[in-house]
Image 1 (spheres, rainbow, N blue to C red):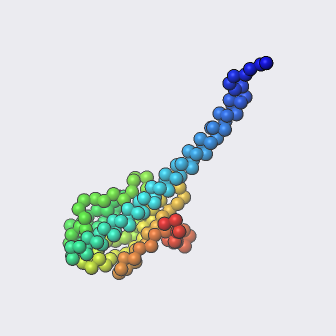
Image 2: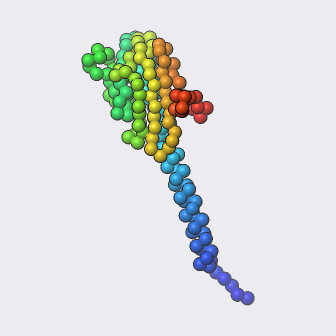
Image 3: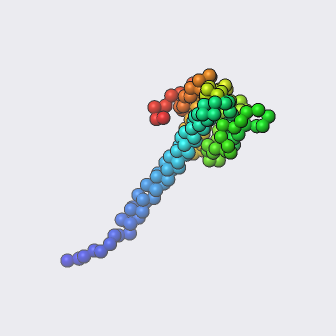
Length: 159
């Protein structure tokens, strides 16, 4: 009786080819998943910064402001005459996430937490076609988050 131990060369080559194909498919999708997660995380931090500023204005009983720029919330410029809603910078996104918006230079919040400025923000990242958006309306500061599409900021059940 002939006993064979191990695999033949053709069997090993087929197994290696299958593993290589699975690795390429997995890496390609993994990059997109990470890019999508970066965009979603930035959207949540953007929203949290606005909520935090609103709550701080209510807590103080005085108006305050924040500025959006360079992937972070910043204190308002001294020329605005507003106290910052929070000290220092609050990071929103990694450098891989691009932020475009039409917010004014300083987002202002009244002592009652009302938003005195509105606008919209679009977040995107290389590696995914996904674009997330946030629209903030006046005066209550109602925010809508979704997916940026042909018709603007459209609702997304994934959020």
